[in-house]
Length: 495
Image (cartoon, rainbow, N blue to C red):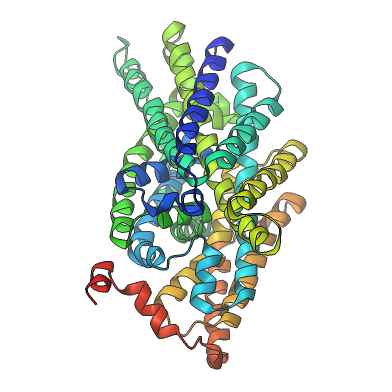
């Protein structure tokens, strides 16, 4: 790709992000506006913002790369990420909004009346956020180096700085507008080139090449290891979505529970439309760019296809458009993650330090970005797909049991919640450390690389078992809290 086109695309996305964030700054003057955009974000705007932050580098680049490298087995990732929102709609969205909390630790304290649960939940929010942020920063560096030839650290630092500026200046209000814009930019960046790529595939005047048929073999010849991988990915993606702090916090920005449900329905439609596109790029990559597998650059297939299939100026321009979409993916997801981490750390600073609520979040945003930034610059690159899977597994093993049981089971106790959070968190948290440092082989390596199939049931079992053993610790006001979570707002207004 022409480096000039790539630089222009990245510059325009950066300027648009800062400009839209500055607009949000003008109306972010209160604590509520900074944390949850004054709880006044409409379903249409909020669903676009969720689509923007949830469609990370893994969605924009890696899904196509996985389809290229592994075939149809990779489709479980987008299926799981979309289905996760259906479970979020059914089980969590409206009750969580009615809790009145700002963050997941807030919800934990409201439901269980325990400061200890809040502390453990806060540490896990930070852990999930950092685990997800580091590959976003590294991916930005890789994209910058691939497109422009600049050192990788340039893209890493650029994304971190832009995210820091937006969160520090305007909080949730600013990043809501930014993420909504970035969803539609990413959708456009994938949608427009694909029409021309499909046209080039079918109308070049000669018989069109066909993707190798072995790309569907995982479905036709599954062995025990393949089935375990599929089911573990399904568990992580189906249940991890409702535990991702940067996703859950967006539902606090809706005016009420009904708006939270409408938001989730719209998000399902947006996700379904989006995820068709990376799959098409992956299949086309099997026809025109299969050499990227051997080169270890499968994740670059989306950026490579326009030049290979179209060539000339058209290929360069569409490549630049896709570069803009990829950079928007890094920015939008990093913004949501930083805000969720900053919100949790900021609350601790404001309660125990000299900072006001807003100043505490601003200080926390700087610290929340610097730690994964340093890790991204100093650590070896971790595959985005692997890191995202680890983050989903950790969220599914900890926050999913906390939210589902906290909302739907009055018997949950603080000791039970702590046992499940720590037990599920330790198991799902040690898995990436073992995988990256030891590289185990055989079934032990598979269990460590994809822990959700066993760590999620463990998290649920610990919460239920310890709660049954500590029934005397059920909060005295649990009935009132459950009514608050499950009573529609209209009924409350009539009383």
